[in-house]
Image 1 (tube, helix red, strand yellow):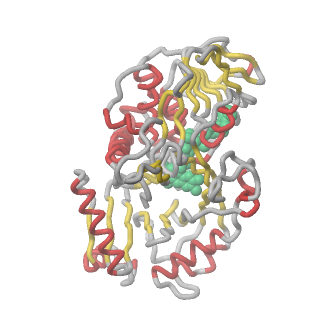
Image 2 (image 1 turned 90 degrees about the horizontal axis):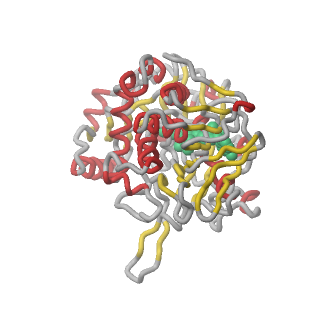
Image 3 (image 1 turned 90 degrees about the vertical axis):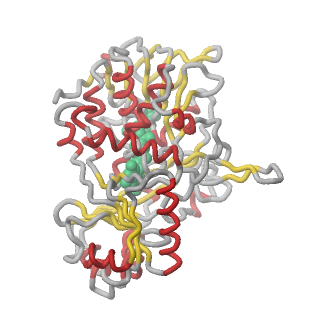
Length: 441
Ligand SMILES: Cc1cc2nc3c(=O)[nH]c(=O)nc-3n(C[C@H](O)[C@H](O)[C@H](O)COP(=O)(O)OP(=O)(O)OC[C@H]3O[C@@H](n4cnc5c(N)ncnc54)[C@H](O)[C@@H]3O)c2cc1C
């Protein structure tokens, strides 16, 4: 596999066909997809850090799954998984090894009859959508397949195509494939240049690049980039945490699927040979942030990122996540997820989930009032009123798994070509609601 060609700041080209801002999954995937769709396009990727994938993907569980209840998300994942499954073909020789795909499945667990009924209804819905590979498992089947889980789990929803991969490997594969691109690291103070309603390039601390098309794909950092042109991205940010342990209790095997508990959905999967990685998407609220101007009205999200994001870590997060899992799976003091060994050598991570805000994610009720909801859909679209400006943001908690399709959607928009699947237009800014687009866990 070829190496990524990187350039020094003083090698910043004066012009480009397309500038991509941000070297995370969204930006690098767009670079890859632009090269595939229009080989030879002179693309420049600008990254503020000294390496790729320096944003939320650092904290990620690196999981992927296919069981999405809204059609546009399901198709986005289906396309993305196709790319993962044929990595060498789509992402260059050696990519399959670099992304190290593990397909051990996702097991959503039910501990009560009402949770079991909800999973059953969910599976029926997914089957109606054509996702017939998703299985509903009753108590006997769970016990037969996963005896090590114990008898507390009385039913489950199983996604056998789900798994996890190496996200760092993935972003580097994208970058390597983009042979016509220049990737510039350590570029600060990126400002959009807009004249007479159209983008003309970017200005940075190291010089100006003129280009007729610019894609903002800088995760939470996108908010500040847009502000440089007086634009407000319709997104909110929620800090999300994870932690990795070097140890895993004996009854939780290396071949286990990703386990998702019942509400409030703590989750965990094996990591490496002996460890585990945990997550939990709790309702985030911070008194400190709520009193500041950067919080939304409800105080449960930020309007602008606070950096470093580490200041928003909650030290109780690992122990609360473990005790939720221990309680749900019936582990008593010292055993299973209740073992103190989990807390002894853990790495605690944090990053931002970026969501659509209520101005681009709402239902309209019978009285004509707009009812905002937490959408799972990214925004991948041209920016209205500024010709040549595009965004690929709001990838919430699935920006790695959905990145191949997200990159292709972004490339189609930037290059003015038809979308691979017409349903991908639902990632547009002007689509405030689609069915089943919320509360995916
Ligand atoms: C705890 C946690 C768990 C997660 N688990 C999963 C999971 O299991 N599966 C999954 O698919 N997703 C998961 N995610 C979500 C996933 O990490 C994000 O959706 C994804 O990283 C978003 O990609 P992005 O490229 O939009 O942004 P980011 O990954 O944040 O990348 C943005 C890039 O832009 C750069 N940048 C920022 N500002 C600027 C600027 N002004 N100029 C230039 N460059 C800039 C950053 O340095 C960074 O490299 C998780 C996230 C978290 C926090």
